[in-house]
Image (cartoon, rainbow, N blue to C red):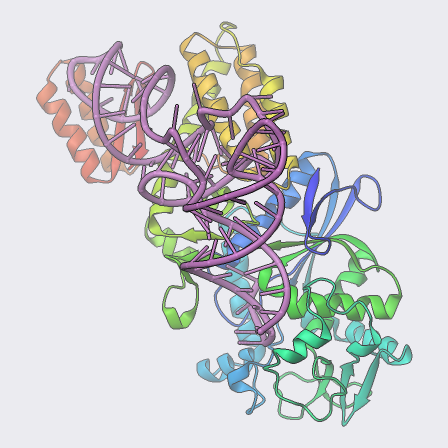
Length: 468
RNA sequence: GGUGGCGUACCCAAGUGGCCUAAGGGGACGGUUUGCAAAACCGUUAUUCGCCGGUUCAAAUCCGGCCGCCACCUCCA
């Protein structure tokens, strides 16, 4: 399979360092706030990547980090407060409570959206000793320096600095909006450890009581669980610089080995043409989508259906379109399940050809849009085959392939929702009325059901209900 | 100022040198089916890929210029 490596800026054939076993690290959320739909797009990409690797028979060791130490923001630089601290003050909570609360909300959303559990959740606060050890190692190698209780990475000592982002020390200097910090040897030097008595979260370190720099956590945690060189590292495009650039610098300076083989970055999504941000008031949460009546599968469909490397512009229209699109696939699956129980008959579509086409799409840097197109074409062919009498063994084989595909997207797993009792009661009335050919009463029952937000389908196998 | 990316129908989106007079989904319209519907199936909906040049037997796909949009360089998925 091919993956687009941000580091080489080319499509590369991917093969894990250890045959059959992929080691992957996903940059996760900073838990000082609810994660919005844009965040979940990136997480959904990582989830899909893992599912695809597993489809291909590879074992995947997945690590997802949780940044539960805040990091300094521009507007709070003077006060020395980070995001978690600001939030803690707003809510009157401790930093731990803030992180714990939003982490729980994040986990809940992930369950709702059918994300798989990683092998390891790495919370930054649980890995401070590893970070300190890594900082020590960098100091010993002369790649970092301590000054006034702080430790900085010395970018001038790492020639590869800039290889991921395309920046160079010169261009960074030219566009510098970084305030000059007299402690630093080079303005691009970044903090590995900050000594700060006022910070809410502090740990003892050889350089003073304080807190770790942002970038060091990912290097320490990923290398602990995945080794000094591992296969895949994902994140949002905003992580390319400075975060991932700095991770590469400190990791490779410490080990002398390549850090990550393939870097994968998901592009951001916009909402109605604008970047999602609190100040624009366009932050959309998973819970809001659920409240509006979109199902988890519909949300997932929208999140996943545009290729991760493509910037996407979200709007309510996209979510509205997901229901009918998904209905075709879910209806196909339900019909196959019914036909599977009957005696053999009809002719199945060319399953081998469909499978090959689907896999070719996914192998091409996770072309989910293309793969979904194959699934829709498959549903079209399959439905036509069912109309032509496909049943029994052929239906079972067709269903098995559909299920196999869906293992990658997790869109069709949810069972049929049971309609409310009132809908079922009216449905019973409609059945009786139709039997008596009392069309007026039958129509009235249908209208009543529709008023409750449900649709009916009169099939030869009985009445069926579907959410509008 | 520097760095990276994008622009395909009403909307979303695949395709990156010839199977393209451009997948697929949504929407719209017509047909089959249905008591009427719904669902399903069949068909129609871009001779054209931001604009202008160039390379080539051949370009949405390569090159140059222009226009527009976005991201990063500061916390951000």
